[in-house]
Image 1: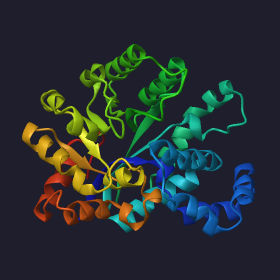
Image 2: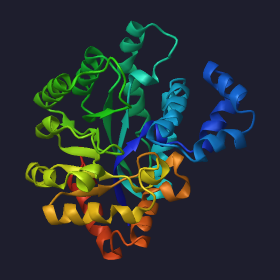
Image 3: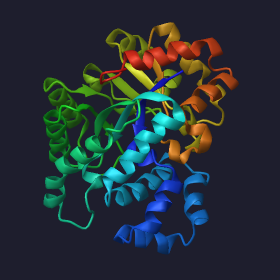
Length: 326
């Protein structure tokens, strides 16, 4: 059986062993810094496998990986995509990334912005492997970026036919767009024909932005909506907004203590007609259980879904895909 995965970050898609292999073979600045910080692979792998305090702590590994990937984006993209095809039976993958964060961090901002298009094209080319997997791409805006930089990411997404949509990711930071500016950015993205998703209501019950609902096709995570704001579920259903559920992430970020806590999410969404897709998010931070098959297995084990539901949830993923599925 094959599976779709609608929510996977390039920064969390590469196993630490592959990252370490690159560090050992390539003497770039970031590789050298990481070799100093982590003298052996065991030290490096521990950073990925350690308990995380919360979502913010979890995201620190993303920052580490993004700067390393900036040294050779095709190297990491190829290995992420072919690994998904060969080891996870994924035949449709949506890979999301922030192109600005894969430019050399030592360059002036204006030069980094100029390189974003080349970075995105490198990712797209590298994902074209001989393995049977269809890959679509989502460009991530960032909550900490100024509106004009996020708008430049929308411009790039609209200019590349292989890019299917845009996302909003990253922790809240000073200097980012206001809620009204986010609404304007998403309205512009939709007006330009882009599909849209946004990280929302993952760990924080108050991280709910109803003003964005009219512009969204999907919501990244959104579990806090079902847990704490179930009165909003009928609106999500009426708009056909699909929630991208990434089970292991919620354990790794201490958002949930047990996946059994997802039962009301699945039950309330089923009762309200809100579609759910099951995805991996950052399998490199989740061990073997982080693979797509592992996500379904854990949900079945903790009686969140029944074994007979697996085909149905996989079908939801294909139905709400942004790109052309197999």
